[in-house]
Image 1 (cartoon, rainbow, N blue to C red):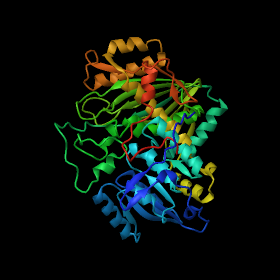
Image 2: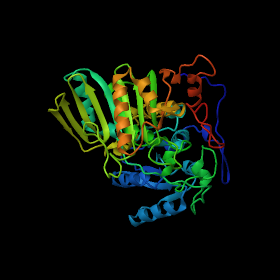
Image 3: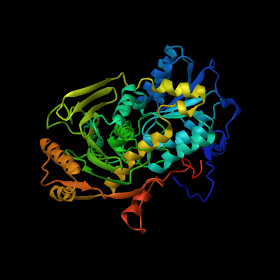
Image 4: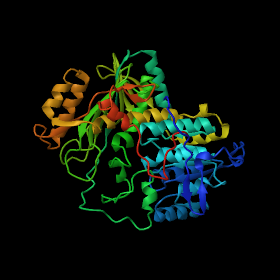
Length: 490
């Protein structure tokens, strides 16, 4: 991405006991690469859900010491510290990541905080001389994801994206197999997230903050506004200031796999989406049913989110070619169906051609530690630049959706009729809603605009200050609440 910088952004943040200019950190002497026999000292940030999984993995890796944990919820912080103490692991506890990053006892951090914190924490960590494992999506918007890649390069840090499928050997075998052309050229790659998501309830006013939670630190870069949903934790995925919907929550994995199989190393030149939040009325903002279309030169990438069950009252989900959460890669003479954990290649008559079994991506965090030791970014299975690109594939359709227009289902179908692959996806989309008791004849669907992109610039094409491209460009980055501001120059 070509940057047009007008100022140097040394980020100054207030912390207890003084002022620290994290943006001005050079690599300190204490962050020198660890020798083969030295322990790698790790801190985990955000330890409620995925971060607890990180703790379990790091405990198993020889030569790794968990030395600190950080969370804005004092209760969960104390609970995790107690669990670690039971395993004879004593850790420092922090509620403010800025104080953690000042510690000379930490070599690397893993970030499992909410999405809107991922990029800023990663950049700060690079500036403070730490290596970084950052959960998916690595960013909350396109612009800040690129900043992590810039910071990793500038400060010589090892930064791994949490797209664990990159450590799945079966998918490496699949990518190599597709390149042989044995089942012809790729016609489309399809990502699927058919994952049940119930409504999150509806409140009538601001809600109390749970005891022991530093709500200002929870909000961090996002606007400090009253909590207007029943549950603070996890349901942040379904509101725009902190989350990215299921396309950014689960779908980042499938987006990454699809881009990998297509062999594409940039953003697509064209994107649009359609969908909505159907079946209930709650405080969530992100769509629970969405189809995203990203037109790559190799072949289109089509992604589908479904949060409702297969039909009203069911306790199971739909599938496409046998896949509920995963990918299909559809070629001239056959297709792959599977995902993390392997899958099967079929011919067009449904006959099995090749099985690709796998144990999944459980070696992903150990791979990060191996690269921390070698100091070679090339040893990483998922360097952060690739994580940035795949995360951006989630943000782009969300931008189209948020700029979209609600219109009758029949009108949406008519506008999509010229694209057979998209019209087919829309017909299945409509049948799914009907099966869930949604009257599609009377229900509006949000159809997002088709947005043209300049992939190398990571910007939308715009010819005026008021066209859709201009509005979309404004949504490539967030507004940041001081002092939690991503610097223009990292």
